[in-house]
Length: 347
Ligand code: UFG
Image 1 (spheres, rainbow, N blue to C red):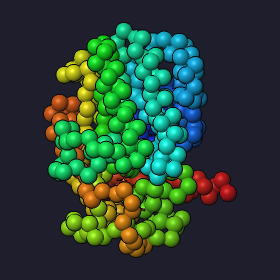
Image 2: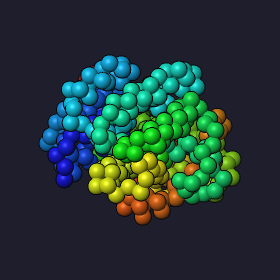
Image 3: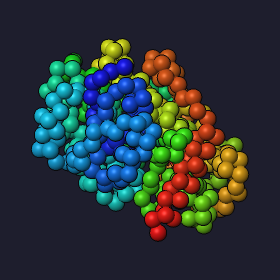
Image 4: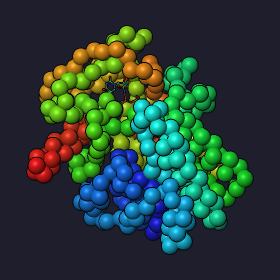
């Protein structure tokens, strides 16, 4: 338990909001910064419904360096930060790279600049398995080489890790952990919070649930000629609640001084790979629905297979994903039905 305040940037977003819930349930007091660019204030209500506790909220755009400085002056006790706020659409980053460098890099630098002034700052960074590209060996360990990024988005995660590592080298009192997420999916089991994609979903699970609810005609499966068992691409789908809990564990590791180095990296995945067709079958089972789909060409930039070696997270962090693919898809489906009902009531 801790009564210290933790800053969660992007705390109204998909992974951020679930992490806020997990933090509150472990006794942390949370302050959220979010600029609502890809989230909604309703999420604050969802968090409150689950935990009975409304986090403090500041609508701040982290690209505003002065606003970042003012925030840390106002909340001078805050020295623990979980930093989610960032743009995350791979395709958009190709079309608008400068937006991604500004949103994901400038903001990171401004926050680190303020934290670096603190005597014992602790920082958790949202990184991604995208840094590995198509790894030569599976499962992927943290020692796998970081490959040249395929997109500006991926590049911001690589550069972000380097910026943090460089900061840790020069300031031994600054402690940070980069968490490399595999594919986060699902929603809180209460369906009070979940993923809220704007427009047409780019990711598999929201596209599946929106198809099943009748919002989209059919799912396009991108390629069935990959060198895998059924020809479709393989990913490591991790329940967002498992991921959220990992953030609390990572922060607690730093608070309790359990780190081996002041900069560490962990993979967060289940360790199990599933093909697109396996995900569809699993979804059909838990939702008791048929999912219309067709096979189309591969999507540019997609890799064949990625799944995590979770040994380091299991042994050193003392964390493990506990929820199954079925659990995650069930929660995503329950959430989609809630979203649909809300939209009907609004219209
Ligand atoms: N897929 C489809 N149809 C769709 C959407 C996806 O067949 O409509 C397939 C993809 O081809 C891929 C799998 O489903 O094989 C998963 O695709 P997602 O878009 O859900 O996830 P990605 O693995 O492509 O992307 C994720 C994160 C990115 C990150 C990337 C690389 O969403 O932020 O991993 O690490 F950059």
